[in-house]
Amino acid sequence: MVQTIQAKNVTLEELQTLFGLQFVQDDNFFREWQEDLPEITDFQKQQLNQIKAGYFNLLEHPPLLEKTISLSIVSPLLFTGEFYLHPFYIKPEKSVEISEEDEGVIIKGSLDTLVLKDQLWLMVIESKRASFSIEAGLAQILAYMLGNPNPEKPSYGMIATGSSFIFVKLVNGESPRYGTSKGYLTRNPGNELYDVLRILKRLTQLAISQ
Image 1 (cartoon, rainbow, N blue to C red):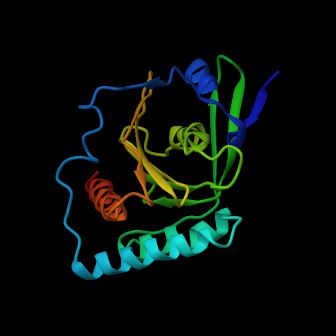
Image 2 (image 1 turned 60 degrees about the horizontal axis):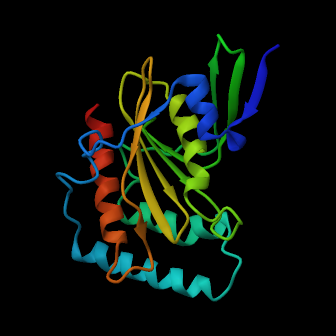
């Protein structure tokens, strides 16, 4: 009998068992979030400062739910980075299905966030759930990335809670491998949204060139 698992319920252990997914801790595997990052303009920095100020304003009016985060933090971040303009396009609620024939398992679900050029996946998770950590979204976004229609190319993802951001790289194949960046916190001194935008711009440059 074929077993179906909703992507939102999948665990890292299941992905490791069913697809041989491996976590790579070698820094050289995922250098893209550290090297050749583009600069951002003073105007973009001003916009990011406003986004950070808006985040602290939101904290005074909980709960901080997914739509609120998307409208107030992630969407302005994408607008600031000009990710709504050509050659990028956004496909919300993308249906993704992956399967492991030997095990008779299908993982499927609807990606309720954003996909940029089928190579960069962005997911927003609620930051006031019991499962507050961005770790709660890691298995889910990896499940969607495993369904990448261009498996011969590396794919990238970003998980955002509003308070934190992390980037993911997946290299598909017989034994898919993934690595993660360090986490970026909105609350930290300075404005780490600068780095988040620079990394996003770098990963989208790679998506265009692939």
